[in-house]
Amino acid sequence: MALDFLAGCAGGVAGVLVGHPFDTVKVRLQVQSMEKPQYRGTLHCFQSIVKQESVLGLYKGLGSPLTGLTFINALVFGVQGNTLRALGHDSPLNQFLAGAAAGAIQCVICCPMELAKTRLQLQDASPTRTYRGSLDCLAQIYRHEGLRGVNRGMVSTLLRETPSFGVYFLTYDVLTRALWKWTKRVNSMPPTPHVKPRQSSSLNLLPGSAYPLAPEERLGSLLRDAAVLRACAHTGDLSMA
Image (cartoon, rainbow, N blue to C red; front, side, top):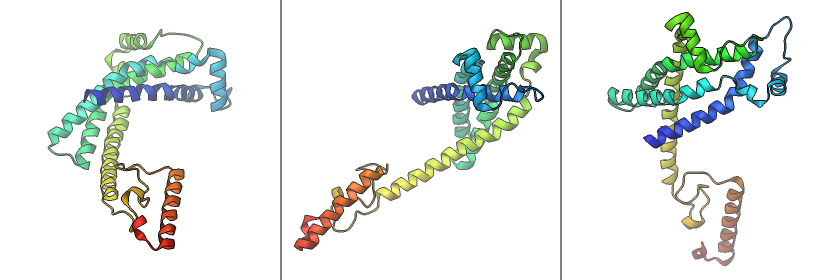
């Protein structure tokens, strides 16, 4: 359980590191003036940010999503697992309900985190600087706008995250069940007639594995089997196979 949680956190961090620059570019393009646009397109926006602010400019506002990531993963997997156990049995419907519950709960962290990230990205697109970082941004919002300001956009976030997390866990469950059934069916298939199991390529699988061979390995296996069968036909001795 702990190892799965750590692996999920590591994957989430990697996803944020890869996706955040694109999110920064998206926000810059969305908030630029329509009368006098600063960027001609996505690629030009990337180039301009890197040229004017260095590569680090693409990661402005990164602290907020990274800070909240650990807590979000803890909430999501903790709530999803406990809800699934409370529902009594593992089924696609219960997977959806447990995922939806997890998505709703994690909005408590997700909404303020996205608010701080957006404020910092907008600040970098303007000449004035109001916030020193993610925590300072949230502190100033709370000081001037109160708890309601920190949770601004919560309703829309709930409407987005609740069904999306339900579909996320439902899709994972359905695909996992389908792949498990497919693996069991493939591994139970008999080998090609007149060919020993160690020489068989009919399944195109590695021994004891459900992973398909690469195309070149499959071709090589087929050629070896064809050579064996030709030898059998030539000598009339099927014991070779």
